[in-house]
Length: 234
Ligand SMILES: [Zn+2]
View 1: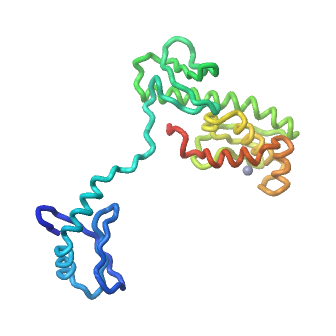
View 2: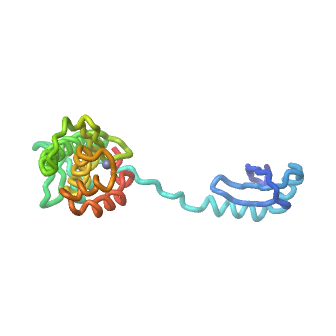
View 3: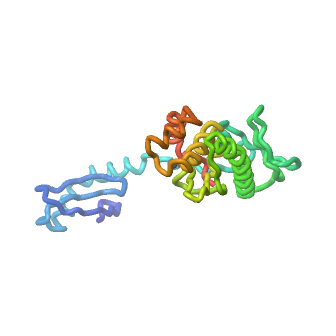
């Protein structure tokens, strides 16, 4: 409806209440009115309260928009967690991409004028190769500790889980675990391999995990708190 110079849309909810209610929500003005009140009466009520309505709508427009997780601009200087370390990206052409734990610099082998999209693509491919390498080193270690043999191992990009293991011994691990410390990666690997002994999450399963990874409880809690949502989006 027209309020002074301004066109004000509103949402109307019919309810069992006895009077007309005014509310400013994220979507704007919301009117709650008894079923028996006509639209003309509602409009008249809004006009009588227009000063309040307009000032509240103005206030709401002035409020800062809540910030969504910022998309990372993949270029030199960008930071990301790598093996639990806050790594800084450096785009430099010449040597194969590598991470220097001394300086926490992750050098990406690309021309310095590479676009953020190119950097992102190369970075993800490199992170996945690191994940594959790291996981395939740790899997035999824990398989040996547990006395189990697994059939195969593949990387996943699932958005909901860190890993899985089926009765055929096929292990799947989320490549994004590479962002986390080796300790947490070890926990997930030990966990999935322990499923080759116990295909459930029973007390016996956790006792099996504990045998090779005594601090499993803290690692599990830490992993829960870190979560997938906070990781850089690729
Ligand atoms: Zn499990």
